[in-house]
Length: 295
Image (cartoon, rainbow, N blue to C red; front, side, top):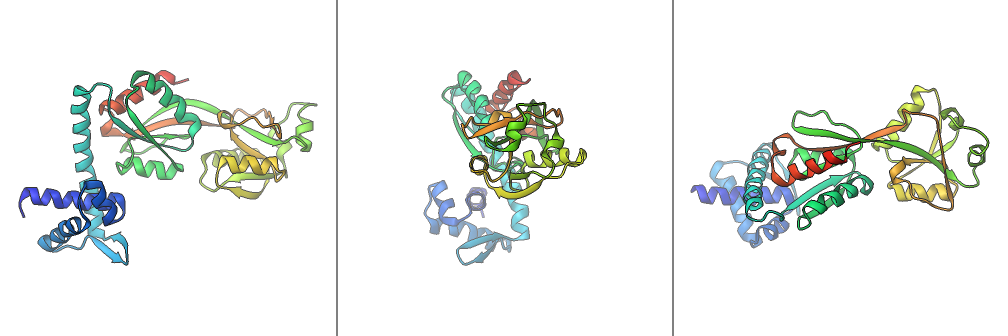
């Protein structure tokens, strides 16, 4: 197999891993599916390896396929970075960034500030949970990640942006909504209360439950919801209390904040990228923008 033929086959393999199906991979490379399938079959036949388990239309990487995908992901992302660097010289204000974030409230001010410097840059934002975001950045499936906690990983560069307080909120008719008007509230006022929380894995939930544990306060989690909007609506309907980052709290005539005297009730916004990609022009400029926003 010639070097050009090998490169084409490796690109077909990498695209299939990235897209999940051969049809989507072929579309992304501008090929017909039989052509892409032939590239992968030639790679397997030439080197006597099996790259995928075929389970109907679903493809699952073999152990060798996983190892090879780690190599191709690095190689072809480096190729994209090189093209990005060359394009940045030729077209100073153009390019594309893929950002992964746990929610819109912290990433959008960053994008707004960045757009003031680079208005022509195309930006795509994927919303996901923290664990998925870290995996995507490590695996070169995203350029930058915006989290509400720090990450210690040798592959990642992580910069703190700011501290954000967490607020408990209640339906307007809740007894604690009336109590707040009479005196300052503490965590112990939450003892035994029903809560509507995000699913397990939410950083806000993890921090909240840890602060409760440290202060000997027990609450009942009688409902889990999959989004902030769903939590807000459930609380408005009287199904329990909720907790959210102050910046993500949305004013609603059916709800009221419960100001608690607790400095520990907070998360910290961080931005991450692959350590070796910090010098990629657009990533570097985004990080520079974030540095100016730090508080």
